[in-house]
Image (cartoon, rainbow, N blue to C red; front, top):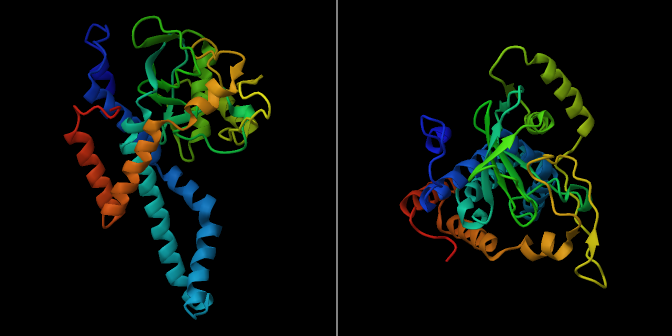
Length: 310
C-alpha cells in the first residue's frame, strides 16, 4: 500500500506527499513500532518488579496481607501493562505532532542482497550517539534518531534527524543503496529487533541469514544509547564518536558533533512536548485507554489538513 502511493507504474516518483498524507505516513510507521508484542513484553519485563511492589504496598496499607491477594495482583498488573502499552500506542498514532521535524527518504536497494523484514519491522536506531550516552533505549524524542521501515526486498523508508545526519540522496525523496554492507546492516537491525521470526522473499538467502544471526549474537543490547556528559566549562564542547550501525554511504554524520547542536539544542523540542500534552489530555478525558486510542485515530483522520506545527 505504501509503495503504490510513492511510485507510478513506470517507476518514477510522484510529487512529495501533501501534508495530510505525510502525517498519515508518520502515524502509520510509528504505530507499527509501538503496537508489537515485543513492545508489550519489554514493558512487562522492565517494570514488573516496580509495579508489583507498588500494588503490594497498596494492599498492605489497606490492612490486608498481599499473599492473600495474588490473583488480584496478577489481574491489576496485566491491566497496568496494557494501559502503558496503549499509552505508547497513542504516541505512535499522534507522532505527527512531535515527529514532523524528521526528514524522510526512500532507500532503493540496488545490490544483489534482498532486504528482509520481521513481525516488528519498524526499527529505531541512534548510531551517532550510541557510544556517548548513558544506557537507555532509543526514544522518539532523542537527537540522532533514525527510523527504518522495510517496504519490500528493494525499498525501505528512512526517517532521520536532519540536524544530526547528512543523507546523500540521488533525487528528491530517494537514495540508492549500492553498498552491500549497508543492506547487511539494515537486515541485521531486523534480526536484532525481532523476538519471533524474520521474512525474506527469495530462496537461497539461508547463508546470509545464518551469518547475520551469528553477528546478532555478538552485538548484545544494541539499543542501549549512552548520554553524553555535559561539559562543565564549555557548553559547546565537542567529542568523538564511533557509530556502530551507521549506513556508510547514506547517513554520514557531521564530525565532530557539538553537544549543543547534536543533543541539547533539539533534545526536547516544543513539538515533542506538545505531543506529550496531547497524549496526556486524551488519557485524562477518556474512560479507558481503548477509548483514548479511538479518539486519537479520529483526530488523525478528521484533521488531515491541520498543521501541527502552528
